[in-house]
Image (cartoon, rainbow over all chains, first blue to last red; front, side, top):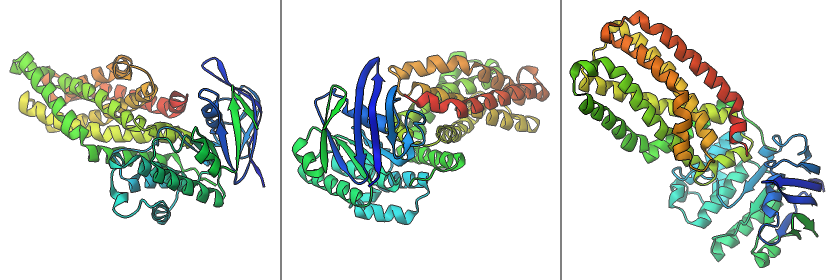
Amino acid sequence: MSIVVDLRDAVVVFNGFPALAEASIEVQRGEIVLLQGPNGAGKTTLLRACAGLLPIVRGEASVLGVDLCVDRQSVRPRVGLLGHANGLFADLTIRENVLFWAQMVGASEAEVVSTLQRFGIDGRLAEQKVMQLSAGQKRRCALACLVVRRAELWLLDEPHAGLDASARDEIDAIIREACAAGATVLIASHELERARGLATRSVSVIAGRVVS
Amino acid sequence: MSTQLSLGRIARAVAAKDLRIELRSRVVINQIFPFAGLVMVMFAFALDNDDVLTRVAGGLVWLATLFSLIIIIQRSFAVDSADGALEAQRVAGLNPAGIFVGKALAVMVQLVTLEIMLFFAAVVLYRVELHSDGAVLLVTCVISATAGLSFVGTLYGGLTAGARGRETLLPLLMLPVVAPVLIGATRATESAFMSGGAAVSDGWPWVGVLVVFAAVFGLGGILSFGSLIEE
């Protein structure tokens, strides 16, 4: 197994405040790791730092073999971050949204079609504008975009928020399938019971530190 | 492993996406075109003098274009920011220069369509006449001025996209910067219309100014857009 995320005493300062204070975490390929902890503990900051969005001011951080202290840009195409927003274009259809991201990585139209089928958002549903979809359908569409983007590390911030039970089950199935296909997943969630059932391991984030 | 595309392909995909969104939502056609048309009509009411209107028609067309540009740029970034799509593009590591060029191209297409309508309105409402000598100058002026406006608009749109009070911040920051385009395009258009005794040849130096302006802001945008949309 190879190490996908390797943070050692990483410090991230956000708005003058150390949102990550000497955080250390190691995640192996294919793992689903749950980040649990109270609001403001640094879970989202940890995910955003792993996506190369926030600078590491001290310590060491490597994601997918890229040293984030040296280069935060080149890791981004290989990482998918799904936060509270879905990152979708509301006026476009599901198919057009997924196709947009497919074009960005040179994926074929056939790949788009098979992804839509796998996620159960094909057929007439694929031609619906995103603004007309339910929260669960939007989430599935956003995850389909991560798949066609061929993201190797999925960083999911509250992926179950706002979804009903059946939509949550669908999201869990998609995450498991992605891991089986070789992706690695970090989930920040308050839905502990559900997320623990999904995760292969859970860690706590408390006051910017990762506690196993 | 993900592969990254060239600037050109990203720009094409972004432009196609923005134009498709516009075709679906029809905001430019249903709201901005009528708004710009109304501005032209209001100018006609306010000035209420055929000679004056013919003389200042070029300036009024470009003023209406500037007002519409503000709305088009705000709309262009609002559709990307609404559900975090602009951030998604940033997180995905898309070449920001490609995003910049793509968004500017889409704005350019919308602006040129609007300008054709505005010049038609100027012919009907302000009774301006376009001579064949001035047609080449007018087309060159429209292309170079539109390119400059699109580049500046996209640059400042990106700068203010995540800012609080961006609706008022965008015109405050952008309008002073596009003043040279307003002046240059107005003078070149007046020459193309030969209004106020202007000759067509008088307009070409102004087109030169517009081309330099577009080149500077196009290059500036390509180089700096990434840092502007970065956290």
